[in-house]
Length: 331
Image 1 (cartoon, helix red, strand yellow):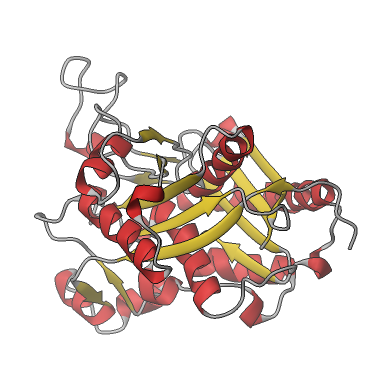
Image 2 (tube, helix red, strand yellow):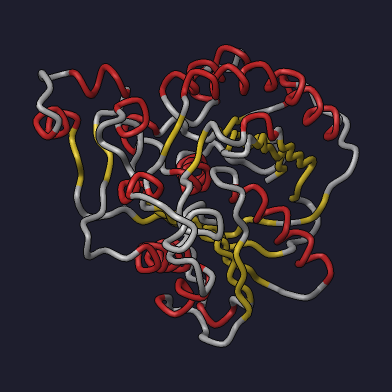
């Protein structure tokens, strides 16, 4: 293994938060008036968590931040920047990080900002955080992803509605001593797929004045064309990501993919030809948590001792846009 360059950043803590209500596959069968086993067979999910209408996205994010702080006994006062890496906003304005900061235990006057690249927002946020830490602008940054996907599901569309869950995850990062960092980071946007995965309403394009209907506020996905496009792009993309780091797949100790669906995870496992325990898979118990999927899987890797010093780890995923996002970290 010959490392080309290393952008210093160290993940010093992670944490997660879930809504209190667990939705079992059998309960979903009843809700949709389907035979027992239908939802599990279609989605591959044993259970996921869905928020009730009272739970606020910012409050769930704040719980994930507190979980990360408490696990490693980190003082909230030591955080000087909050990055929201959510795919779905709390509202159009103000930006989501401001809402999360208000709900959190962090100092109320620190800087905050949003980074949104849909499902790979956390990867972009890590890259942004590394850049800011290495300028000396900030010393310790909290990155949090929290999405309530259940609020925008169209239950008439089984292809998309059966695969999502709600959740939040946080990572606290600092510059470190230079031994850990980013070996490569690559994001590509392929706009041929811009309308394959979308929520049309809520912005300047479709609103009460320009014209909209209820379906514009719900999630739309063309699963087969999306999967076909992503599959055609992923192999050469992975080669570019690995080449940037000066590594091969054999050098990667752990793969942390976006938990998009059971089919996408199986496809990723076959393409990468990795052992089952080297690929983090929490999908059966969480579903697709949108931007919270990757940091939640990262947390799982850490607590199960699959994120170890000196052993390269790959974060990888696809997002609406269509965006491919990947990062190779040296813990």
